[in-house]
Image 1 (cartoon, rainbow, N blue to C red):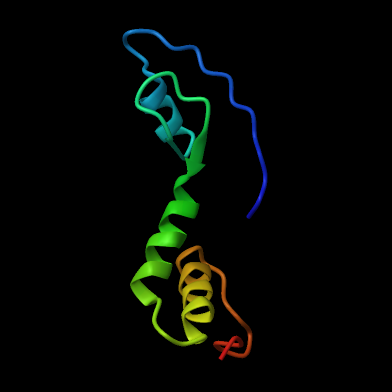
Image 2: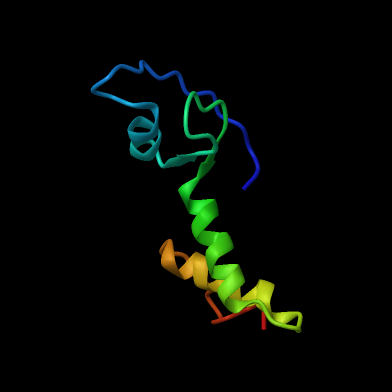
Length: 82
């Protein structure tokens, strides 16, 4: 899930950077003139992780399984991380 992608935006009064980034699947990291944005998929992943996290080692595995299922992926033998 690690990569950088350059996106060139043509910003004007009717097409703000925030709206264009959301349309591309990213959330801006600054309110004005953003130079960095984070994938909405990654934000969803971290939200799910914080919902599942606990004082055990299963949180990471459960989060991965949930996110993969939400994206339409799965394991042929069930929840293989457990």
